[in-house]
Length: 126
Image 1 (cartoon, rainbow, N blue to C red):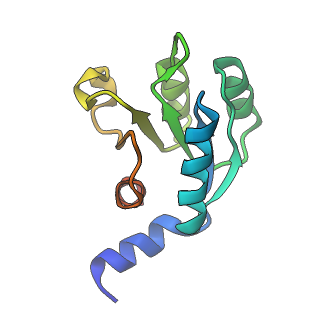
Image 2 (cartoon, one colour):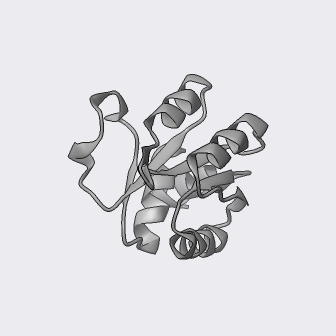
């Protein structure tokens, strides 16, 4: 087994995902991609308040966070997750340079999503 295949196997083992995305169709596409990669999506809140509640409820191993939830930036939720030791991936239609420096090491998925990019982001978490 190649090193990449081993990394992919480790990254997908028992991973439950929280998707925080305010565009329902975008969340559905991402859910389908994650399902094909062997992940289980546990919840897809579309608002800041619902995402905060889902984070408090737990039950996931990693979170994909849309950078902007309507008018609300997701950074306070991201900081809360990282402080708790939960890995995150940002999703954005903007360039990664627009993220605060504190999140420099966080993988970024650029929209529109590509299967290979989703897989690569999760491999970086593993």
